[in-house]
Length: 193
Ligand SMILES: [Fe+2]
Image (spheres, rainbow, N blue to C red):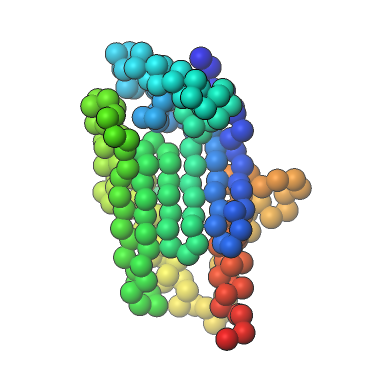
């Protein structure tokens, strides 16, 4: 099966009311059913079986889309579901104007192959978790943004304009999903009481 198959990936869907999801083909392994060489040949067969099962159950398009594509979803205002190299759910609870608590959970399917479960949890630990490769830099960036907002009098905006001039549907890295969030935020905050 062609691992590089570009399905319906690389797009953004405005789900309305501030909710949005991006979807894209991704280079990493996905324990649901996308094998990568670093997982070793011995895991290849079980993953191929799972892919076939997905295709049987959901049809070729949807099954392969589930296996191959990653997605990041914001449910307005403070719930994020990332279905990438593992599935993580995050919530964001404001505690003060300049402070919030982020909680994260890792999700896996029941009766998962124990080795794949291990990979899933390693992916969470090594990439998505608070000490992982992906998350501390984001928090550093967010904290730096927050520091920057003290200059709101001089610069009363936050640039999330990437992809705005694009003609045609937005792509997954166009920041349009962030604009969906902030449009809803503005709509609610400026609504008549
Ligand atoms: Fe990051």
